[in-house]
Image (cartoon, rainbow, N blue to C red):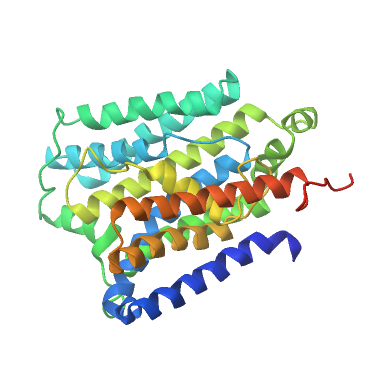
Length: 325
């Protein structure tokens, strides 16, 4: 049970935030606020899954928000130019997975520091998001049968009563698939192994390059899906889509108990991490807290979570005395 302590803490944090914001504003817990709140968690959870898996390898993916923006712009531009949404999604998927593969090659094959490698692809992808439609946001994707079905599937479809289940079902299926991969497959064990000790993993026969590339491609896939959700919600492609999502991904992973030092953490925590982020954004907005102050509060929370993880992993007790090996 001790190994899940950080995950339990994250869920306790979610419960505390719900109670606090409900006391501050009873409207917070009402249906008309909870439905949009739950849907807003979905893209945060997706980037949290992707960033979390990369962090478990001991790396980081700074391109995650730009890939999201590129995904939204590519799919919207293609649909606006008469391409069937299904074909647009497939083309978009190939482009986003290619970015993940490039990240994997740079970090896993050429040993480029992940901060530098993914910073470069972040800039490139943001540029592509701006150029794909001639440096303009796209128009509305239209209201044809195929376009309406696309928007219903990725954001607006109601399945039971007033609850928008379709987007939530998609995200939960993705979470279940990658949670299974991390906990019950050889690939998942290899991801944890290279995050714990990359040299030992290599000597044990783990293909470090293949495993690193797989982690980055998963991250790009999650960003691709989040981009589709963002575009479906807006009904258009925006060049600004995905801005600051690097921070959202790190926050969802770290608050959920995934170590930035690699080798530990569980995707079950990313649900709580993404929820904390969305609840803070929503609750502070309803409380009338200015955007600048909201960003400061959330930034402090992320920094504190990372510091606590570093202190825990480095083996230091309060008072500066190191634990015995």
